[in-house]
Image (cartoon, rainbow, N blue to C red; front, side, top):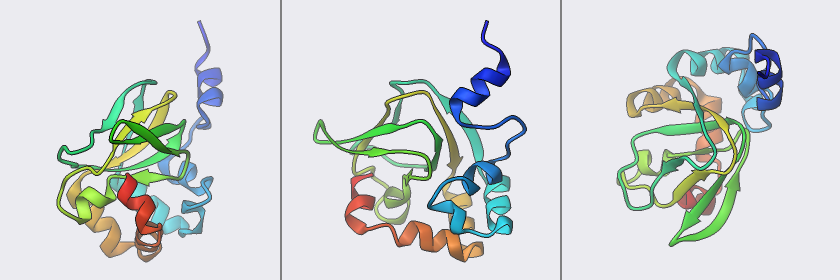
Length: 147
């Protein structure tokens, strides 16, 4: 079979990687301090998902804030692909900040590694980590509305 080292290499995560390390390699989250990235890693849960997995469904309750660490996803609205998500992108914030309903469907286009945060952890991130709040809230509103 494929070695664990090779799977780690192919996934984009390095052996011994922490969530903080993986976030530091993304363009968007590299602006956060190491302390903030460590706070994220204590609050988030790593999740590996297969290609094709539905990560959010348009019109359904959204209960998680998700940061893409590796892999890619496609965002759909009204059944049409409208954008893609790659490492460092996030989704779920609109549902948690607004009315709780996911404005779009997000489907894994490849196997992915995600950092997942529940509503309480998401609020803690925004309260305790100013750089992270800026990353989330400075994303153009149109893009946030799409995911």
